[in-house]
Each structure stands twice: as structure tokens, then as C-alpha cells.
Image (cartoon, rainbow, N blue to C red; front, top):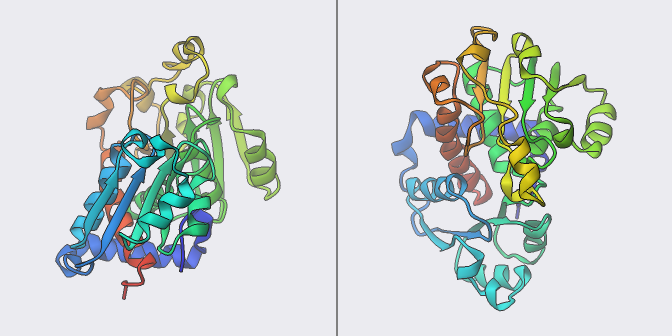
Length: 305
């Protein structure tokens, strides 16, 4: 039985198969409309989510399956003190597969060791968000036609952003990737990413503060919000929350085929005036997220062709 805790749980070849399946689902949705008849997905979300939870639910419903679960720890037995290990043992009796989001890093991994069904990490603290990374990779591959041979700028909260950490770990497996990290000093990438992931693997990167200084060099720009929920005090959040705002003026500095991605939700970091720019693909990204989660469910349930 396979789980998904990190994007690295799949080899590059397995990811190619997953993305090929997602592409087939996009082209021929009717072919997959009943493949999960009688199957149930449990969504155990101990932390608020709109996109990820609804995307998983839409994915399972699109496959003909059913969904059960909770969207808030307060509405689960966690509020009574039940452990993650006990919860997953119970969920294993009800469902065929589980997607879990938890504020504590490693909680889905603990669940996977006690589970009788596949467990998908739907985000654990500031650690990993593998299905967002799969979404990002599918979006890039579908719209750029390749994974590799590009310069990607990651902008905003690079310290606490689990989407950023997962994406960096996934992209270093592809050829000729260069990273430009754009952040205030307080939100720079963690040392372990810089040393153990990038330098250890001889991956080229730059760290800059001003977004304008890098726009012309980028093939992809991955914007992130400054996350209020990761800050220890409101004062620091207020000081940094509008540090970057992508607008038409900055977009004018970019290549004609540069793509702008964002894991969403956005706050102020991308002006709504950018939404009409054909290079802004963050809402397409949401749709790709449904396709890749459909492909993931089929793969983990061993229902793919």
C-alpha cells in the first residue's frame, strides 16, 4: 500500500505516469466518471482549507465516489483529545482512502504508520504540501510543455511556505533549473533548504529582495502570500504582508511567455488587474489541481490503467 507524504515519494517516472493520467482525465472526463463507484474518500482537515479540501472532494465525486469527513478539528473527536493514530484507525473502517491536513508537522506521517488505507498528506504545518506541488508541476508541464530548463522565481513567504519547500524539493530532480528567491530578510528560505537541498545538490540559486530586479530573467514566477497564521505576533505580519505586490507595471518587465503561478489564496500580493493578463495562470492551476488529485486517487487505489 502506497501513501503520499512528500512529492519525493514518487519517482520522476512515476510522476510522469501520474501526469499522463491527469492529462487523459482532462481530455476524456467521461471515461473516468464511474471508476470509483462504491469507494469513499475521508477528508480529515484539522486546519482550515477551501481549495485543497474542495479539490479533493470534487476529484472523488468526479470519479463517481463519495466523500465523508470533517473540515475543522473542533468538529472532530480531536476536540475531546483523540489522537491522530486513533482517528486514522477509526477512519480506516469507514473509508478507502484518506486526505489529511494538520497544523503539526509529521502528523499525516504518523497516521500513515497506523492506517489500513492510503493516506495523502494534504498539508502539515509549514513542512510539506505535496498535492499542491503535484498541481504546480502538472500546470508547468501542461503550459510550458516541459519540466526543466527554466529559471523560476519564488516570491514572498519562503520561510514558512510549505508549498515553496515542497516545490523546491521536487524541481531539483529536473535538468537545468535555476531558482531566484525573492523575499524580505525575515522570510528567507530556511537554512536546511539552502544547505541540504540546494548547495548539497549543486543547484544554482540567487537570493534577492526586490522583485523588479529579477522579472526580466524569469520563465516562471511563483507568488505566495505572507501567512498570518504562521506569525507569532501581529506587528511583524502587518509590517511584511504587503512587501510584494505584483501589478501591471512589474508584469511589463517580464518575458512575453513568462507564467505567473500562485497556490492561493491570495491577499494583496497579486493585483486583480493582473488577472486579465494571459500569463496569469493561477486559476488554471486550480483546475489542474482537480485533475492531478483524481489521478492520485486512482493511482493510490490501484484503479488506474
